[in-house]
Amino acid sequence: MTVMLLGLLIFLGVHSVRILADDWRTAQIQRMGELPWKAAYSVVSVIGLALAIWGYGQMRLDPVWVWQPPVGLRHAVSLLMIPAFVLLVAAYVPGNHFKARLGHPMILAVKLWAFAHLLANGRLGDIVFFGAFLVWAVFDFRAARRRPRPESAAPGMAGTVATVVIGLVAYYLFAFHLHVWVTGVPVM
Image 1 (cartoon, rainbow, N blue to C red):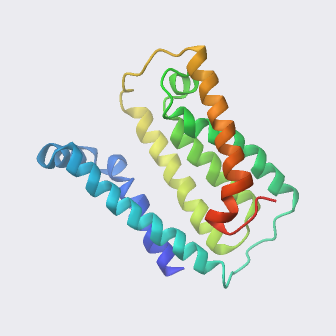
Image 2 (image 1 turned 45 degrees about the vertical axis):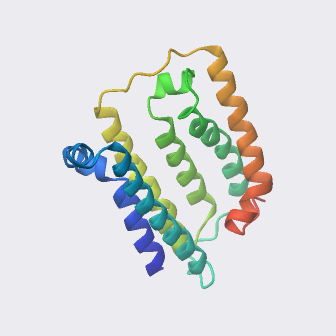
């Protein structure tokens, strides 16, 4: 679990800079330039995420059970992941109503993903892993709501329909084809 905790600390720590030290972040971007800042941010994030995922996989080899979730909650996760994928896609598709209305759909997608996975996983490592993401997303959403919204394209039906279709296709591909490959665990 130590490797997973280190990875979470690095990954979520880097992603918390804007929450905890936005002025420092802005100063670093001005000092380094936007591209070098994004490159360094990305490299550290990838290292942290890789450590967290590898540590999570190692934790699953010798699990400590806290509770045994009912099988039906796995179905709830599957259902909750549909809007999570749509919200994730909404962060990138310009001119959709989700982003216009919610402002920060990716953070909401992370909240939904983490909450859903907490429902269906009762091992201590799962609770720490998904719980850390959920707590981070709550604080990040609060911080993001206090910042002025960036300019975005006016929402239209085409952007919204594209968001839903791409989100559903991404959900299908991940749930039925990639989840086992990425996590080693079938969805059902």
